[in-house]
Image 1 (cartoon, one colour):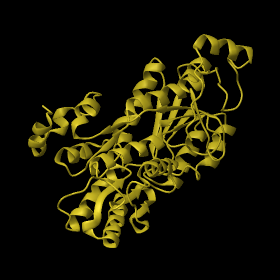
Image 2 (cartoon, helix red, strand yellow):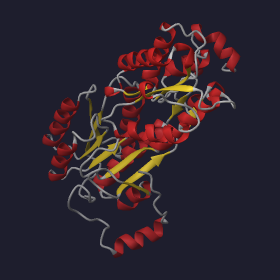
Image 3 (spheres, helix red, strand yellow):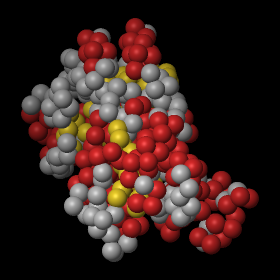
Image 4 (cartoon, rainbow, N blue to C red):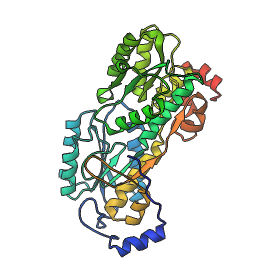
Length: 370
């Protein structure tokens, strides 16, 4: 999945693209169309409402960046599928029928949406895959290095277990949705670090449909019943929303000394759980970087600004249907208690006043968050 593309200086790129006749090219959605000015409409499709990041961060940041890039003339048509692949397909088809100029797509089901992506291409509408790599003729892709996310989660989990961690330690593994290609990459990355260092029993590993938190909680209960509550050394949770339910299940099973539990997305309640010691870590993905890159890709693509678009997409990725998709992979950070201030606070994701409400004042004081 991860391939590093060769860096090309802008001046060299300009010459090589011009020589190949690519600059100011027109054609299919995979080719820049320089007939658009600032008066454009960008369709933005987000997958669910479980993760608060889409409403709180991704969409507002994209909207602001698109306004900046288009001298406030660009419009955004925003839709959230609420975890329904058929709903998302209808939302996207309506955008195609409404003749938006470009679509930013974070797919619910990367395979199921492929035909609608093809419809967009037929209509001359480029599709930028966001966060999750949809199948079909994608014009560009921006996300995080997803295998690295899993590796970071696993390495930090091992740190939480301490230097004496070995294969006698049993780890429950609650992965994301089997229809989400990112979930498979998180899992691959995590297993690359955990395999041979701890034991993940087969009856304690689950792929959680639709990333559903209550389902994750039930899976955790099944795993505890299978391996015994006294044998749970740690829990790999692929994201924060599931981690919240996993922790409830651990407590319900009578586990009072909570083991290290991982997460992802740096949700506010996850940061607060980390402060109190209920959750060990989360992965902070710099959403402003990702969202702004997607907005730039979309605007540059539809306006035919090939040099700027190519400068953003120095990486390449493959999907099951298409090869060499231009991409940008953004780096990630592990957040434990000692790193909250230097990550989500420093980047302005949360103010200390948002984190350190009355219920968390003591924990914040102990962590030096003032």
